[in-house]
Image (tube, rainbow, N blue to C red; front, side, top):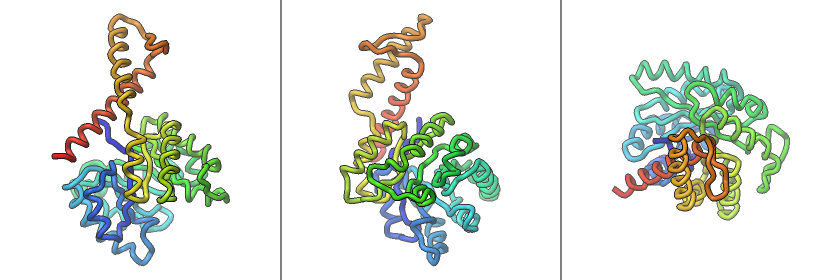
Length: 294
């Protein structure tokens, strides 16, 4: 069963009310945030809240991640001490620029895991700088990385440009990160849509992200969950077509045939693998929905 990451919602780590609410939200993952959402004077409060809430939330829902502060802040180690708790599904590291950033995080996690008898912690690398974009594949292919997310807001600031709803200023890095993640065999997660009132714009942006190859999207408000989940959920037609591809291709494969034609389209191994993934996503969503109703 694959891990669903259609929607990853940031939740301020210093807001206990919102942290409790995260248990009932339908986002595939919630990211307890100790970085941008938390002012400097509240960092310690966020650590205390996150430390207590990770195990509590893990009893009520899946997909518990924590975004720590970047290495450049000098706060990462203390954040990790708070975040490394039973039930944690992963650490998001912001401002990832090199593979060494991930390797350093891995070493620190290994120490905490050994000390606290915790399972191996996956990593989501958040790329937000030009150097990070240049090194995207090296970052994505580092051990423990299960997903690479794009942070467009900080990226545009570093580039000296201005964010726009059209997104032309980030089209290259957005596409590049998706390609690098897919090449490394991990999930690409698209950047946030900052206008929480513009639902139509969010849907258009999410559809573009899916066309670029993204598996899901970072979110900043609960109202964005349902529209984004819908965009990244295979339609009934896509599921039926995937079933047909898998069925017919496996029949052909058993006969030693490596490519077939379905509805006038040539189907080879890459199409077969894509169809398998579609069915895996569909199955994971069905399991999630079944669990949420019991």
